[in-house]
Image 1 (cartoon, rainbow, N blue to C red):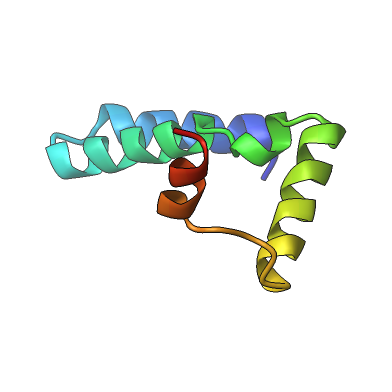
Image 2: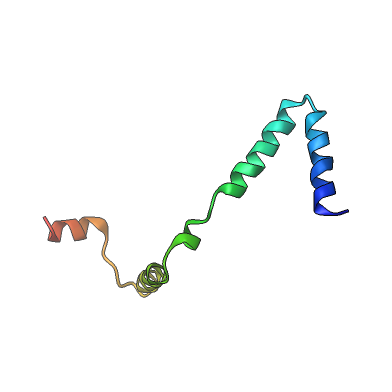
Length: 73
């Protein structure tokens, strides 16, 4: 079956249902689909910085929040 026929069939099923749970489930699928992954929206420089920071954390090259704030107050 081609995509247009599939869409028509789904539209018919949706129009013929009175079950609010089905309608809500379909809405959730579309909402989830529209939610973009923030990673895909970052620039390559931003991604590089994040990967570098993760590497530093793995290597133990970091300080906790309180120590950092104490030095900069």
